[in-house]
Image: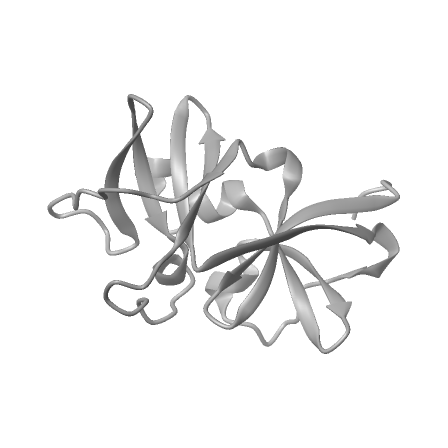
Length: 150
C-alpha cells in the first residue's frame, strides 16, 4: 500500500460491480463509435476504433473479467488509456463520478475473488452499501494476452 493520504478515482460500472479507476491513468472518457471486429482476436478484444484519427484497440472489460457480454445494442462508454506507445479504449457499462477516498480505507483484495479479478485489483474500499474495487488498468490491459502487454 502507498503512503499517500488519498486516492482519486473515476467510478465505473462493469456489470453490477462498482470499480474505481485512478484519475491519473485516464486520458479521456468517450462514447465508442464504430468498433470494427478483428478476426481471430481474443474474445476480450472488442475490435478497433478510430479516435480522432488514431486506431485504438477496444478491450471489453466485461469479457476480460469473465462476465457475460452486455446485451446487443446496449450503450457503453470507453476509457481512453495509454499503455506504452499504444492507446486503448476500455469498454465499461457506465462512467460515474470522481471520488476521493482516504488511503486508510483501502483494504486488501479478498482471497475468495475469481483469480481474473484478483490479478487486476489493487484493493477494495467499503462504501455505504457496496464495495468499490480499485482497478489497476495496466494489469487489466495486459491480462490474458502477453502480446498486448509487450
